[in-house]
Image 1 (cartoon, rainbow, N blue to C red):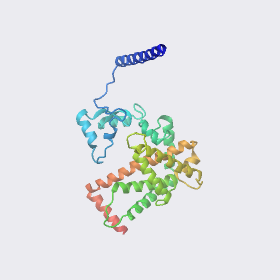
Image 2: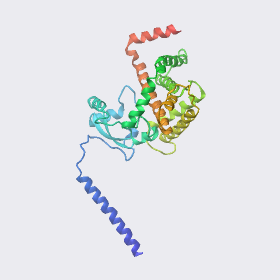
Image 3: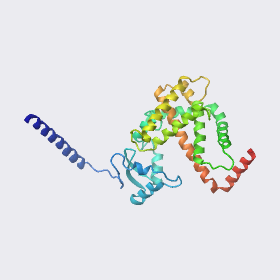
Image 4: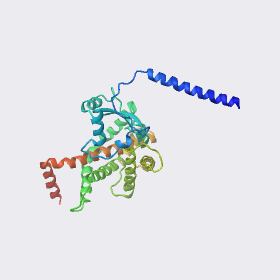
Length: 310
């Protein structure tokens, strides 16, 4: 008994000694010259406050309060990572101009876990460049050049024709419907309105809600549901790969014929392109509609075109 007590006390002494040495060394290190700010709660930091909805024409209450308290550049803890937040246009421009030189693009590990380790949005360096070249080569495809505008017009008319006279519409929802259908067709030859397209869209919406949520991987959370939807979407893409015809000229078929990527890499590439293309385009379209009222000439021209259609 005495021996066991001695071993426990000695073990506790070693742990305490290690902690003292660690703290002493940490205090001796030269402190980083970090901006002011708050790190919030342990692990989740300020993520929940940061993710509260706000109008797209503002920076949101979270940003407004932090800017007024700490300035345009402040520290925080978001998506499980220590973060420097910049609302300074000059600094942001400098960072974007020096991406790949002084700065390296990356996403928090929690978001990377949903998008996949081979996602073009997560990769850096040569692998990111290779994935980007593959995507750009497909976009420069001669067939796409001759068909893209025609396909854009077709999908636009499909959305417009679904509107009922005198009904209210949500511009953002309609923009998302348009961009998803367009991307799904060019990536995997999915026709709008078909059962498989609508099922994929439902899973994708669940997936998207988890990407922009607190990284809590527990049953019932948006993050856990997003991981489950990711698995469903990847299984769907994999089945499309197995049934892919040589005659189909979508991105998935093009990558299978013209690259040496592994199955896992192709799956993450397709998912990341669907994510990136859908989100950026739908938000831009929704904002364009919102600000259209500020340009009466353009608004009148649009009305004339719509009247001529009917």
